[in-house]
Length: 65
Image (cartoon, rainbow, N blue to C red; front, side, top):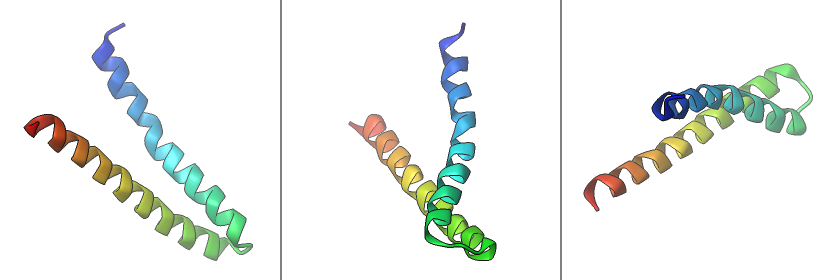
């Protein structure tokens, strides 16, 4: 199996994990679906931005150091 193909293939799970983790976290805090979905959306954005920042930092470090 091609190593590059495997490395790209594992990133297909990231959006699914983002949605699941956000929904579960929001559901532990709220009981109504409208609040769960709005809280999950906010947490999904925060987690995605955090992971993007880490990825960008690691990319810049590997490129310029």
